[in-house]
Figure 1 (spheres, rainbow, N blue to C red):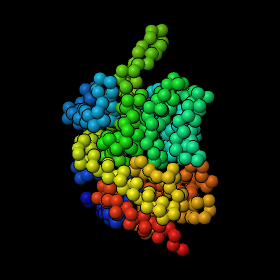
Figure 2: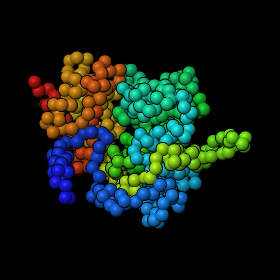
Figure 3: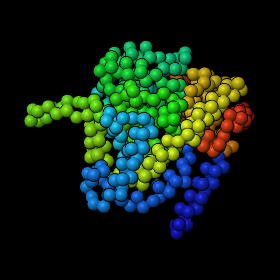
Figure 4: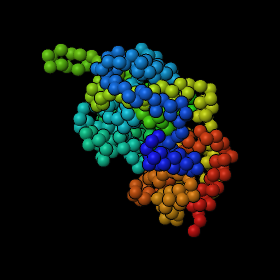
Length: 404
């Protein structure tokens, strides 16, 4: 690279990543093949539209790339192409969620999503997000005692508030989600069920977490995190569920959920897709459809359980008592007997351990200096870490946090 300043900075970032222990739950390390696709000539192609229906010429190759990504996505998640369609163009998870709401939820209607402080995402209806500005959030929480989802309480909330859509799938929830119960709750109020599986997509693909497709109307995901691809997004939607719309002419038109979402992504939101990103997604989906990847996701869960269990033995409170997936929350404030989440994060970063401060359910502190930490093991598992390494790491974390 001729740009010496950027070259220097990229080398520094590569060195930082190599030397740090990465416990950020939303990060991972992609393969050289994914990096090659991201840096390929596909970057140069403008491909506004969809395969076979572009607004520019010269798309015969990138059409094949996008179609391959679509085929691999459906195959990886074992979906029937007659019942399900997938859009691989969203630039990330937030735009994917925007597209779903825009397609299926009238402005001002209610989105029932988990409260941000309890493990939800900004795009699940939070007031500072677009999703809370154009729609109204009905926020649900975890049970105060168990710190787990209370499906009976969710049912009561849904029946009282009657949301148009219910969002399941979270950024800081460590337990398996009962998709069947979530669908029952949605059906009780005639709402759509949107599953945002951004964090657990890799686990779902490999069978390390129950799949939501049997019960969801729409499923969104990022392609990084546990799926170990480039930063991007995908939307899976039903082709065999239709919505009736009355046209200005008075005629009734039926469109599938997938068709509505296709229009919502383009031209409703985005112009030309990032074809290099889609090429990288196709590579990652191919890599995920292997025995090696399945073993990798199994190890993620083992490592996360080992780290949480050892920290618990060392006296730290783990939210909900443990974890079933790649992430968990740790209470470091302990009602004032410990340190704040920001202090803990800063102390660990100074020693080369990277993670993020995080609110915990019913937190008494602010999001800018909360009571907890969020820890994830996908990235370190990519580096080959095993349970014994997690036990040692827990000891190191404990020593750093308890040092005066």
